Image 1 (cartoon, rainbow, N blue to C red):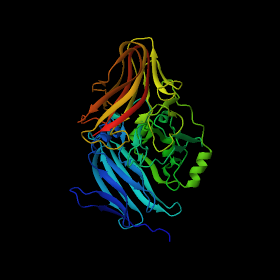
Image 2: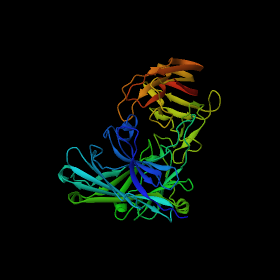
Image 3: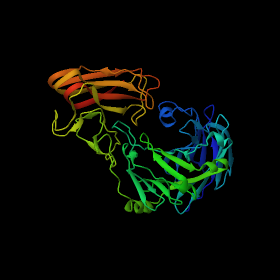
Image 4: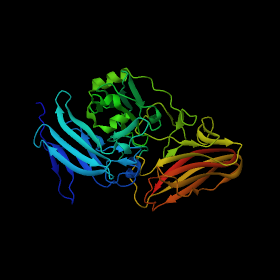
Length: 466
């Protein structure tokens, strides 16, 4: 029997300010959220700029299905987040107990420069067996002069993000399942853009415009491939960028100066992409360009126990059950040695003739990095083996420090024993213990040589202490 939707907007009891949900019959399919966002998500997703963002959360795209879209922003951001319509003014709901629910969310910026009216229309498409969420993003700029610049303006009208994506960066008990390998987009010239899902591939230039009613799709999980469709003229005005932290998709509208002095409206929708359409897009994608980071096209990946054997080609998706970040080089003389090591033929190496530090480092271990949640007393112990050859200076060591993303580092290094001269493989260890700083979202793990000579690092083990 064909599905017959009956949409309602309901408020849940059981808490002081009850949650508000969109229902289809007795099934909740999306949640309207306007609450304070805690660290580290506030720091990472909102750059501490919007303490109580208005979002539509946990969107299901099919009856009985799992949520596929974790969040959709219902406001505008201007001038690199310096100004945004962050204050909720009103929510109006029409179409209760019908097959077409319409929700209008009004927000404005604190200074009175602009007002956003975001109209969300929820229907069901029986051909696609998909709920369809239509977004009309109206913007009235009361003082265009405040945003008027000689260059063409770019305003972000949405920054949606996915459920269960990224995959876990490390293996841990009870971790969620990784599902997608690629992001696909139908560009304005008719070609299909492809970005492999790994945190370093987000440097691939994103589409600057879309074909009319073009799609942006996460692929490939049969029956569960969410799509953003850019409707009408919005397609030609929209560029996108993918965040390397969480693969959220920044939708930017582009405007000439004169357009700021009239009404603006961008339109997009969220729906399921048919499996056949995804396969057709995969068959006609453009080749993925090489991705290079500080001279490397492949880097060793982080694992909590590693001999540095596994690598990630930066223009390919990460494979397996995790979506790891790689180790990052910082300084001169760094190489991934695949000819010598302690337990196999792999190690990380620093070799240079100059004074001063060079480091291999990893800064995505923690509460803000797609792992299991922290508790207040969390700590870490890192052990590993270090071999040195004629190291002169302050020496070679392992180090840890608390980390805060998006801000200058403010916490000290905690260093292991420092080795100088020539040493065979030597076990070293370092610990960092909570309570962690309140704004902290991770730890940095550092393999450091301060001085000239050569150092090899191998057989690293990272343990959570509770």
